[in-house]
Length: 351
Image (cartoon, rainbow, N blue to C red; front, side):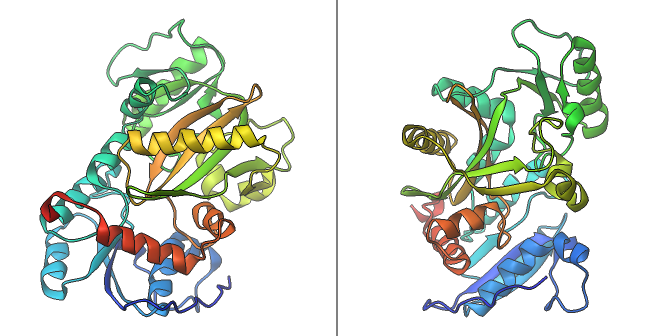
């Protein structure tokens, strides 16, 4: 796996503390590592190596369940900014917001989303309630809490999609998540309860195109070209769902011909409407830094917001960075902009 040499931008060198999971601290070089190994920590390697090539003093810090080491690094090294690549703390995805809160209490500038935005977007049920309040189109849904009877509702039509109310990265989502009967619904909700250990969110399945919109900014927002997920080899045999295997299984991706690229053949009025809808979602959830909004475009032209993903994958060449590049922002410029946004975010201790 080759990687283009990063361009050195004309920027002031900074001390950048890159926060990563303790198992994903990247090596100094790709030499001697298999493609499978590299995929495990590709985002971390891309960010650290690119920041260094740009002239910054980037230092990765592996974090799992000890905030003491984070505080020690902040107090002794005094980084200009913490580049936050953490997606969990102590193995719990919802706890990443508390790490960011801790950084705020340390008065340490950081990249990416603020604690409130992380909390609102991670709770998919609360997120959808907020979207509905703001009249942003989203699929009808219900929540089945753990340890309660599973009673199918007449308010939703089949097919329906069953997912965790709080987990990210499509954890717990497979082709079996698309259900077409009360019996299958009960089975899949029970699966989420027992295997994912969370409440289950069930929403009506919107048959259509899977779209993503990358957004960058705090107050002034910049959107990039609308991106699309397609299966080039499945025909109509496999429903277009971004399951865990679609996202992370290279063999399965090859089998289905999974591709993402700039969306084409979208009517101009639809493009403007989708971007406006995503900007409204970003603001309604109090997001900052950068995020990706996931949507489904139905055959009737209506776009439904599925969820918002703050701090999405920043691998060089993946959806967010690829969309930014098509939109005129190189990978180096993207990382630099994220750093600048983190340093300029108006947190309470600054006011």
